[in-house]
Every structure is written in C-alpha cells, then in structure tokens.
Amino acid sequence: MNTPMKKAIVTFGVGYGYHQIKHFVFSCARHVPDADVYIYAGNNLLELQSRFVDYPRVKFLHYSENLIAKLVGKAAMKFPPLAKFYGSIIASLYRLHVLPAGAARILAAPLVQFMVKRFFALHQLVNKLPHAQWMFTDLRDVLLQEDPFINLDEVSIITGVEPVRIHECNMNRKWLSTTYSRKLYKSVRNEYVACAGVTLGSRKVIQQYLNEVSHDTLINLPKIIGMLGADQAIHIKLLYKGLKGVKKQLEANGRGSIATLHYSTLHEFDRSMGRLANRSGKTLAVVHQYDRHPRLAQELIASIEMEAPEFLAKAS
Image 1: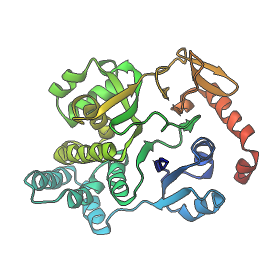
Image 2: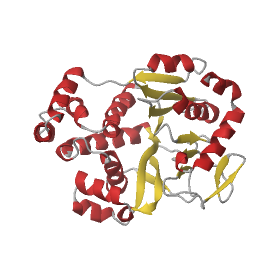
Image 3: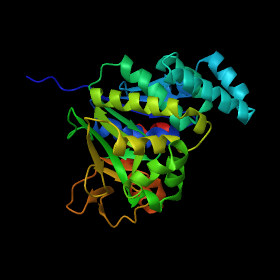
Image 4: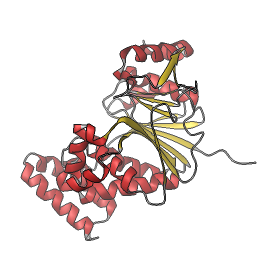
C-alpha cells in the first residue's frame, strides 16, 4: 500500500487579524484536511492560536529575524548610500564563497522588502520539515475550492500566470529591469506574467526553487534594497530562465487548477453556487486575487460561510 504524501501549505499572516485569515484557513481545512497549514504570524500569534484551537493542523509560527543583523541593517537603511554599500559587501562575500548562503540571508533580510525576505523563512522551514509536497501562497486574497496537490508530480513546479504579457505591465517590466537588467527583461518581454502568489512543488523541486531564489536575491542585493516587486521579478526569471531540469506548469486562467484574477475580466470562468469553475465546469482548486472582484468575493465568502457556520461563529 502506498503511503500518502505529507502535504504542507505555508503562508504569511504577519500583521493580519483573525477576520482577515479565517476564510482562507477554513477553505484549507475543508478541501485539504490532510495538509498541515503553517502560518507565520506577528505579535498576535497567541490570540490566533486560541481562535483556531479546534484545528490542530493549523500551526502558527512566529516570524522573527536575527536581532543583531536587524539592528545593523536598520541603521544602514537610514542612509541609502550606506545600505547599498553594505549590501554590496554582503553580495561580494557571498559571490566569492567567503560568506555562506545561510549567513548571507541572515544579514540581507533587514535590507529587503518583506515579500522577498519571506523566501528566506521558507528556505529554513522546508529544510526543517519532512513534507513531500509544498504549497506557498498568499493569504488574504486566496481561497481553496479543491485539493491543489492532486495533479502534482515529483518533477513539476506549478504556478499561475496572469492574462497579460510582461511588456504590457509597467510594474513587472520595471521590476525585471531593475533586479536583473534591461537585457533580461527583453528576453522574457513577450511571456505571460508568472505570479509569485501561489507556487506548488515536490520537496526536491521546491528546495531547488528556494535555492535559486536565495542565490538571485543575494547576488542582486545592492539593486533591490527596500525595493517592492523584486520577489515577482525573481519568480518570473526562474520560471522562464531558471530551474533547470524542472517541468514548469504555468497555469493560465481556465486552463489549470489556479485562477489568478488581478487582470481577469472573469470571462474565462463559470460562476455558480458560490464556486469558480472553468468553461468545462471543472472547479478551480485555487482562487487567487478574488478580492479584486467585489461581487465574486461576496459569492465565494458566502459559500464558505454557509458550509462552516460553527467555525466562523468564532469571529464574534
């Protein structure tokens, strides 16, 4: 008899309260009851734990950074030229193999935006836990409707793509050019925007992904200090130019298991009974960025609240 693969869903709720995460948590418990759900939280960790005490697979982790590195980095960030110089030293020592990757990540974390440094925490967590299948996801604007791990194999990485090409999106064009180069941007300009908000893979694939995210962050550190969007640029670069040996499943709206809705007009989908499905009637496993469409958000949340009145009664 085959042993079921152990699944982990990881997300970040630092700064979020119970009301902002309850629907996501219930959708996980409802549709992937055999998955461990890890949520990084801030100072309200104990409160959140008490709210979800009846859901033992929901585990809250305290997000923290090395205190000394944080103090040094915070001081440097007050003077942008100094921060860039400090980042250049870290990058150079890492590139010369003088500074190990783990130590470089500790020093770099205070210099980069949270959406970038979260990958450092993920790197540490994946190496610590034994799970065979992993999903990294945004929290506040994500809901599950089915088990997203069903079609995941050992050699694939799965992520959603926006219905817009990179050259059509000013933000992604800028992020790629700044993080890497104009040349790199031009090499991927006609590809669709791969969204860093939802990523799935086997343990081996996810470890490779996180190693490459770490490497690209560290060697480009002086260019991305405090910069919003570097995580998105790195994700795009890896999905189109990196991850050698990995099968890349970039799922367009209505053609896979992930719906990515920021740029969508929703014409790719069918909506009924509070569910989002493709035109063939297949329910999408993951709905990302649903809050960009207020009416859809109301429908999805109403459906969840009908399924889980006892669970959501704790919101009082």
